[in-house]
Length: 153
Image (cartoon, rainbow, N blue to C red; front, side, top):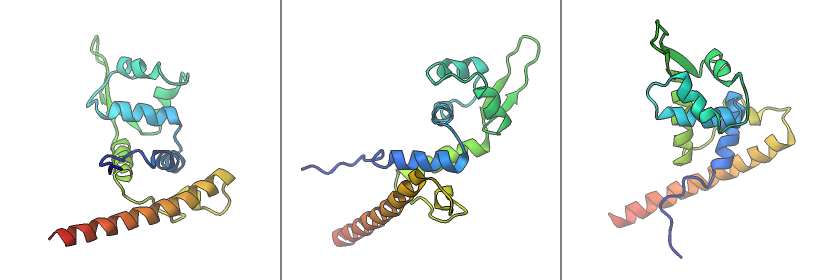
């Protein structure tokens, strides 16, 4: 049996659920933010190009702009198109998601994770139990990795 070096997506479903719950985003909103993350600046046309792949929502662009996930980089002037960029808030969300995929624990406090509030849905309770277990497994994996490094030296 081989050891897999790239196991980033093992907890993707749990991380995705947490991100969507914490930031009140839909799956389509999250998908488009990931797509736009590598675009320094983009036009509304570029946004709509990817948006065609997602569930139909005529207001998605305006909602993301209104909610502060994207911001105007350059206003429209004459024949020059407006350009947009992800906001600082959106870049932090994507960076945080990547850190979680790389093994950072998901917070378990009520203030940092809405799944740990008192009156939550059954799904939230199931996911929060898995978050606790996932964090435990991540801590064990880090401990094993540190012990392996100590044995090598």
